[in-house]
Length: 337
Image 1 (cartoon, rainbow, N blue to C red):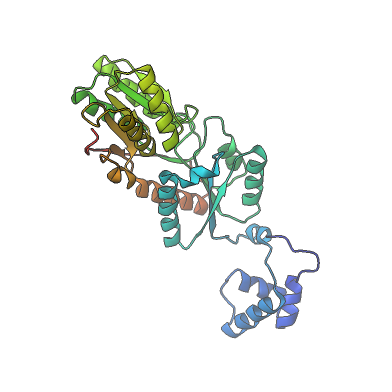
Image 2: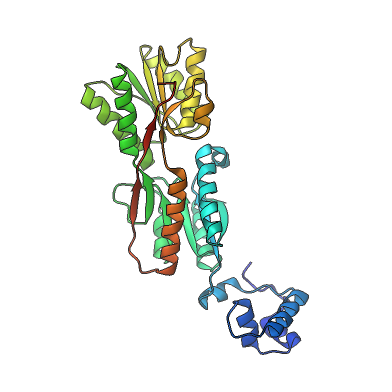
């Protein structure tokens, strides 16, 4: 879309069929004021009859908004779209954009070529801004978008020195609160199932875990996962094999915690009597596991709506400085710990 195909109708042909000037057709397409209703209807009939498709790039250059935003996930695996975290974010972002009458487009960006195509697609005026999620520490896509002058907001951040607007949760504080809760409960062999270590969100949750253990004089027991339920099962099995005396598991996502519960049950470990379990996110899933999960609640709806608010502000005022927003988390205590 956005390029006139050879032989496709032109703006001039629409003007000729409607019996108006080229500028009048342009004003109708851009929904500008100053066009009589009868003239607008005549032009719209001509557009429909000829099947004319406006050139989106030209409209962008003329200052016309596309009224669309893309939410890009930089994951390598389509299956990650099925994880509750992404569903929650898509819903909250979609609701906020709908309130602003802006269309949401979803895209998966996995390779360097796909990154370049996304930048060119956005620069062509097809979208007004970009929301990014699941960005790894070495990913240059946020910089590529910023260098192209495209309004961009990250969910999370690549490092502590991020220079693109982002919205994040207090991952360090949330993890610290979770592990302190386990320590207060008398747990002394507390394992951690992390997310991918090349993601800053993982590093922050791991830091909170380590800080709480250091305050209690306890040894860290760490196994890496990838936020999925399957990785939670694999990591917990490895944790039990390496540290049979583990008496608590802090999983960096609810889905990994759910996987941990299954492995512990299969190993004959009672939860929470033998091993306490805490997750992170507080998805609906956490209330329906057996037993229900103690977890760290991220304000998912607030995260999505804040991302959209910041992006719309950057779209209206491109010169605005980037902003960093960190939202509070809260420990929700249920039966698993």
